[in-house]
Amino acid sequence: MNYKVITALSALTVAVLAGCNHAKSPDIVANNIAATQQKADDNIANVQKDASKNNVSAIDKVDDKRKDLNNVEAKGTYDVALARAEGNHEVALEKCNAVSGDAQSKCKDMAAADYDATKADAKASEVSSKQ
Image (cartoon, rainbow, N blue to C red; front, side, top):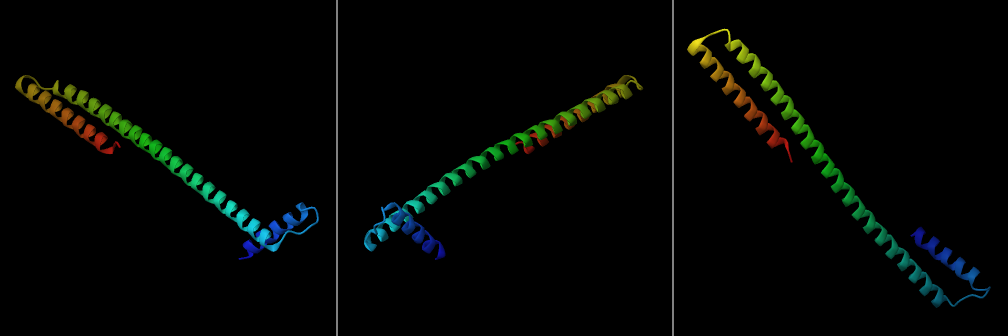
């Protein structure tokens, strides 16, 4: 309520000062005040609308960056798991050299199966983490 009174008084003061020292009729002043208030309200609505659009745009950009970050983290986790699997596979193959014949063949087959399973788990984890 005070805002409207202050706005009305401000508009009236400007009208009086700009009117070369002669007062305008109360009807004209009231119409001018109403028109000025409507213009101000329209401007505020437009600014709020623009601000809202800007907020939505910024949120979309942040969401995109968050997805990018999540995908990079998922890829990094996969790369680490794959490197760990490769290292474990190489160690397992070296251990297989301690035996010979059929036992060595079975050992290498087991090492390969473990490696393949670990790779598949790492890939499944990466895929499920990506957006």
